[in-house]
Amino acid sequence: MRPFTVLIGIVLGSAASWLALASLTTAGAGSFLGQAKWRPRRGGARTRPPWPACVSLAVMLGACAAHKGPPPSTDIDETGFRDAVRVLASDDFEGRKPGTRGEDKTVAFLTAEFRKLGLKPGNGDNYVQQVPLVEIRAGDDATLSVAGPGGARPLRFGKEMVIWTKRVAPAARLQQSELVFVGYGIVAPEYDWNDYAQVDVRGKTVLVLDNDPGYGSNDPTLFRGNATTYYGRWAYKFEEAARQGAAGVLLIHDIRATGFGWNVVTSSWTGAQLDRATTDDNAGRAAIEGWISNEAGRALFTQAGLAYEALSAAAARPGFKAVAMGVKVDAEVHNSIRRLSSANVIALLPGGQRKHEYVLYTAHWDHLDRDSSGVIFNGAVDNATGVAGLLMLAQSFGRTRPPPDRSIVFIAFTAEESGLLGSAYYVENPVFSLRQTAGVLNLDGLHIGGRTRDVVLFGAGNSELEEYVRAAALLQGRETRPEFHPEQGIYFRSDQFNFARHGVPAIYAKAGIDDSARGPAWGQAQLDDYLAHRYRQPSDKYSEDWDVRGAIDDLALYYTVGDRLARTRRFPRWYPNSDFSASRSHGREATGD
Ligand SMILES: [Zn+2]
Image (cartoon, rainbow, N blue to C red; front, side, top):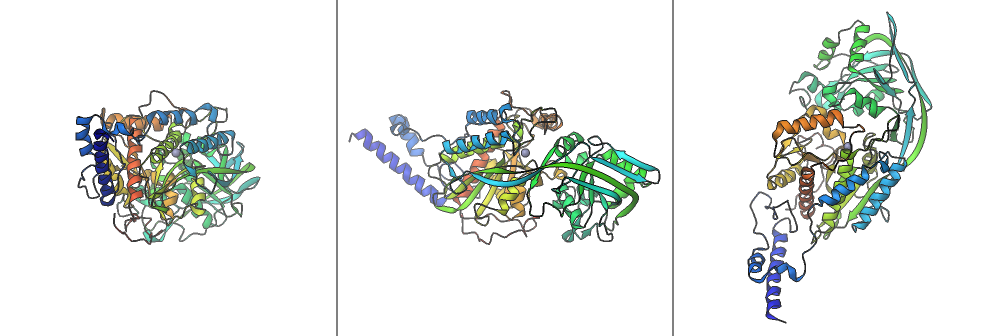
């Protein structure tokens, strides 16, 4: 052996023992964060990186790594990211609607990519978990009219109302169903609130305000003040009305509460609608559900001789009583029905030490098909970016040496756009024990407007997992902040929510608006422009002009969080005042980092 080689051997040996020591004393080696190549220990103290000896000798000897060749980079691959977005958001994928050719192509693509990256099938020997769904297409001939002392007033489908039924039946109708204003339509014992306390709505139609009384009153002592709660979600309101026996549920659209305009209601809730396939074919749901526009909602109060402003204000105060409006509703929808099986795509990177504990990365692959004239909703930002990010994270973890202790699971969910259906199916039929799932990191709609100084933590204040995000953001020189519009309840609107409600700490975080080069006003204008002109519209297309550095930063941050989480023994806990703290205690005490 030549002296040169011996010396290299000593140097490498010394680096290796640093690595071994580091993996005992910190979360482990192999992380990266843009330029920052070493993580602080939890608590912030910096640990000496493993390579200084190598680096200084490298100056004398030439590149010491050249001896073996460097390991493949675990950096997030921007080229690969763009390539995947380009494919997923192409017209060839036809808008990625579950149950279409677009799904077949998407699932085939994801399966092939995961296999190419060397990941194992996540569901036994299959990359696919079948998700039974039913598609109900209500015809455009849906009618709704409200009759009062002054006669009947029909509401125009698409313009003033969008109605449907979740019942798996060829038709559904309301006949002379009394209309009752139930305020926010909430039964929440923990907030000492019951909008249905003194009213029997069986067979009747309830008229409901969006969001919750904390939002409506802006009173921080009611619910969670302006930040919306579980009870502010539209899905909850439809479910609660059905539990109360209502035959119909009409929700008044509020652009500030939802964060989207009426155009999004018409593009999202018309045409073929997907739902979970249930044993009772949704017979327990109200016969008719729907949105009515804000103007049409106010007009109903006028028609009934009631004051919208006064009653909606009263609905946000304790002691509100539901109001029979003295008008009656007729409505009818005709459906075509199709049963189908869709797919969650699941890939597994087995852990090096604790294979039966899991860290999950998730992103929904589905989008919105075509509009009635055949124009494709490419869903480039939403959510080709998230799925491409999932693939790039899988690539980086596949290259990580040594592999993380816990297994890393990558799931591309179906039917998120239809009400988080793929993730709902997964949490009720988990492939990997939810109790042994340390945390979930969800990707939805990555940032394409350049680097930002801020990272928005949606639903902040829920679990210790957020502390991992904070620490990783700091290493990037970025700061986490709560969401700008807590009234919109974004945390409840993507797949992380289904894990949270089943007790698994779940994160949804991404670049905010504080653009590194151009500041927050520019960033806000970009976000507003996206929400007004591209969100859930055919114009959400890929462009080579995208500046994806912010997305790459976010993926690097997610990598660090997941890597850290996969090397600790801890199971992050819910904060005691979290809405989800009762959903499950992990039952696992901390055993040290
Ligand atoms: Zn999305």
